[in-house]
Image (tube, rainbow, N blue to C red):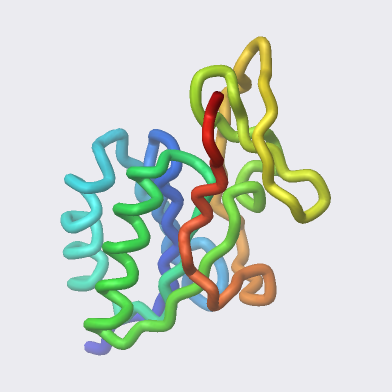
Length: 154
């Protein structure tokens, strides 16, 4: 029996890690993990690859935790190249209704129009990311380079 053709969307910027499995662009399954992305991504994708035929890899490419962005990018880019699976990316603000994203200390990333910068907050807001119910490929880019977006901190 042939495997279902799916797209996989990954958000690793905060805990929990979110993995969305999409069939015909609609969210059909969600995997959440509180573990470190470097530890759990190989296990999650081992199971996904056994069960599904991945058509497209998508991910939130930042801003957020540098290490989480690096791990997700290197992992997905490697999988993309090895398995010849197209890869797309979108900035993290798309997945949290354009709310501030914790950077360092009391600094948060904010998106003003199309520019990402840092602002100081007295109380750092909690960032909650959600997987979209439906994928719109037009909202994603083929430029999958990570968005680190932080300069020198003085």
